[in-house]
Figure 1 (cartoon, rainbow, N blue to C red):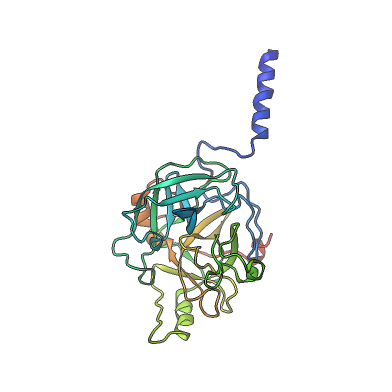
Figure 2: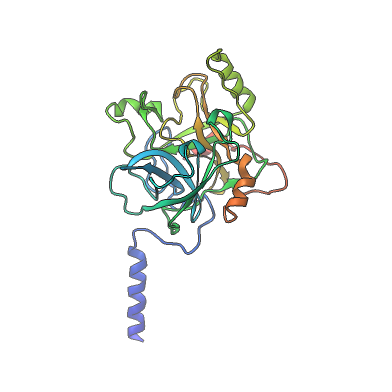
Length: 317
């Protein structure tokens, strides 16, 4: 009996002192156990967005972001994979916070294959999503979890406050992920740590009108039905080069987060009347469900849903 008690204490000590917890199954999608966040366009705390993926090419060159949707699948942007049949140089990092530094809980995988929508040509013409199959499936932990996805027809109302995360560029020539912090990183092109910015959803007609203000014979932007916009009329915060393929997530209640968009394109970065344009994830629900049956969807499949956050104050805590 004493030996049994000692074994129990040793087992208890083992689990209490583990730096991270490994789960046999994913937690409810998009309910990160390490939920602390810093809002307002600054560094995101480690583990706060456990579905975020760092996509690199060649000699540790960050090119895009992505989000985990299943143990062996990542959602990203089609333009991050200009030649989907040649993926040998890609490496995907999950559970990462620092871009160039030690990440205790990260996992890395090569790419097995990439699926893009039929007919994709460039981001401006839509269909800018990619389903990336990992060669090595991830192990669920409190640092690595899947994001929830919206069913087809799921609508995010204008004004819904959402978050975009990534390691994108901080200045023009590199452009900026978040204009507010640009002054602190004049010498850095790629951010050393993961950042987040809070952005409101902009309805399709308003977004189109904003871009028409700046349209000309040389530059015309059409906001298509498979696109969704987020940002501020006055600019100041945005997703930019290096953030492509990363997630735009919105709160779904009870600690759940739903991926509304995939960072796609825009004119400039954080400029007035030029909000970021994202691929609308709900438009690709059928493709995702067919390709990745184990992906986690939020809501009901057979009726259109409209969601808006209750109040901005709930997101400031």
